[in-house]
Amino acid sequence: MLKLFLPNEHVKSVFDIQPAILKQKGIKGIITDLDNTLVAWDVKDATPEVIQWFKLMKDNDIKVTIISNNKQERVKIFSEPLDTPFVFSARKPLSRAFKTVAKQMELKKEEVVVIGDQLLTDVLGGNFAGFYTILVVPIVQTDGKITKINRKIERRILNYMRRKGKISWEE
Ligand SMILES: [Mg+2]
Image (cartoon, rainbow, N blue to C red; front, side, top):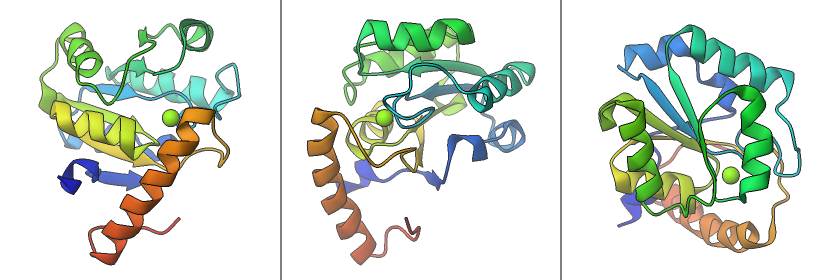
């Protein structure tokens, strides 16, 4: 069961994820979380770095969709200027949004990676739906209310897995 919380990969930042590496793996699509993955949860708009990263993916024919559990207004205001598809109120870790998006991308599960900063929503949901998952270090350590509770559970899972030697990264 705990295996479902284990990402396939762990990187410091979303910007470490580059087209060349994805292409080697046969990846043609990215499903990414928004809050604390692309920008801090309380930052409204995409930063120049984020805009550049989206452009880089587009130039390399890698499709990107933002899937967030956050409200319509937040996700829409952030995503529209990036000209990228998005799903709000996604109810991660439920599989539905992940599967719908892969279908809209017209890609197979094996061709899509799921990126996010939370084990309990992004990684669990991505794994459960059958995708390759990449965990990123949260951009800021502060969080919204619900996330705070998730973080406590997450801490326990991570500590357990570290003891068991399942993960090697440090934070
Ligand atoms: Mg997040």
